[in-house]
Image (tube, rainbow, N blue to C red; front, side):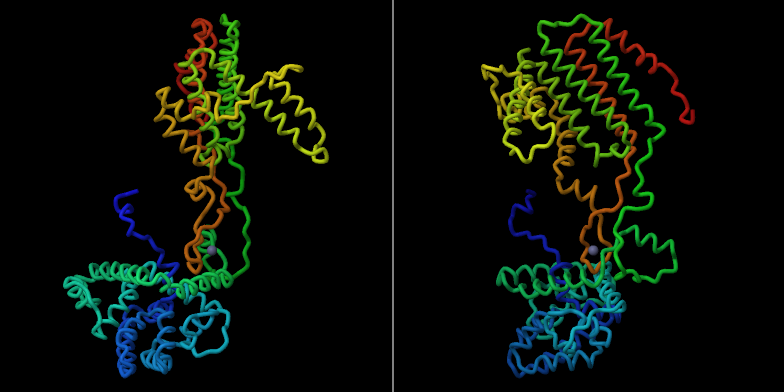
Length: 529
Ligand SMILES: [Zn+2]
C-alpha cells in the first residue's frame, strides 16, 4: 500500500457510473444550451427557494436543488407543492425544453418522474440517443463543464445562506465562473469539494445514495438495450466511408465477428524464416556433441535429465516457430516460462548432490503412478478406445515392479522436496531473471487481469455504455521476430549450459558447433536475398 492508501480514508469512486445519471437533467441542459445556461439554474434555485420559504426548511430546500434527480424526489415527498413549483420555475427559465423532456421521458423508473409531466415512457429515438451522448461526452471531455455541474450545490447553499467553507475557497467562488484568471483553480476546488462533500454524506448516512445508485443501474441497463457496443475500428470505417451520419449506427444491428486483415493468420516474417531451421540445427549439434563425446554412463540419470530437458525445450520452440501467430507475449508466454524454468532447473540441479537427477526422475515416475490411478477412477461407460492403453503407458512410466509396489508418490509441488521454483532461482543466483521474465510470463499464463485487459479486451466507444471493456475482435498480430529470436538465443544458452554442466569433451563440442562460429564470422546476406 502507498502511504495515502494506508490511511484508510481515501476512497476511489466512479462518479461517471454512480452520479452522472442522477445529474442527467443539468448535464442535458448544458449540452443543449452551452455552459452559460448554468446561470438559468442558479436563478431557478433562487426562485424555488423563495417560493418554498414559508415551509421553514431552508437547509433541506437548498441541499435538494443541487441538480440531482433523487434529491428533487425527496424534496417533493417532504414538501407538498414543491414539485409543481420546481417544474414551473424550470419551465420559466428554459430548463425543460421539449428535447430535454423527451430524453428524460425515455427512461423507466427515473427519480422525480413528474419533472417531464408525461405518464408514459417512450423508448428513445436517434435524436434522444444523440442528446444523451452529447450530455455524457460534454462533462467527460470538458473539466470546466463538470465543475459547473458540481458547483450547483454550492450555489444553492450560498443563495440560501447555508454554505460554509474556508476563506480561500469562498474567495475563488466569488469570482466563479466569470474570472478567467482563477477559473482553472476554482474548477479544481469545486470538483474536489464536491467529491469531499459526497464522501461526507456517505459517511453520515451510508444509505444516502442508495436511490441514486439504483437509478444508475437502471440508466446504464436501459442504455445497453437501446444502443449497442461500438468498437474503435467501426468508427474508423465510418470515417473512411465519409458519408455516414454521425451516430447513425448507434442502434443498428450488431455484427460482431472476426474479419478483414485482423483475422488472417500472421504470415512467416522474412527475417524470421530461418529461426526454425536454426533451432533444429542447434538441437542436432547438441545431440551430436553428446554422442561423439565420452559419456559417464554409470551415472546415466545426469545426462538423461539434462539432455532431456534441453531437448524438450528445443522441440517446444521448433513447434512454436512454425506458427508466427504465437510469436507474441499473448500467445508465446508459455515458451518464455518453459525456457526460464528449464534454465533455473539446470543451474539449481548443478549445485546439488548428483543424486538430484535420480530424484528428478523418481518424482516424475511417482507422478505417472498417480496419474494411472486417477485415470482408473473413470467409470467404464466414459472410457473411449485406447483408454486402457493410456493407463498401461502410465504404469510403464511409473517404473514400478509388477509384484512389489515400491513406487512412492510425492504429491508435493516440485521434485525438490516441494521447494518452489522461486526458491531454486534464488539459490542459483537467478532471482532477478525469475522476477523479470518468469513472473511476468506467468501472469499471462494465469490470466491475470492486466494481461487479459491488454491482450483480449478493448474499450466500447459508445459513451452511453459508461466506458466499459468488451472482448476484442482483433487478433494479436504475432510475427515478433525480436521476441522469437530472443527465444532461440535463450535456447542456445540452455544448450551451452547443458554441455558445460555435463562437462562434455571440448573437442566434441567444438566440432559439433563449428558451423555456429563460421556463421558468426560471415557477413550477413542482405534481407532481399
Ligand atoms: Zn458497450
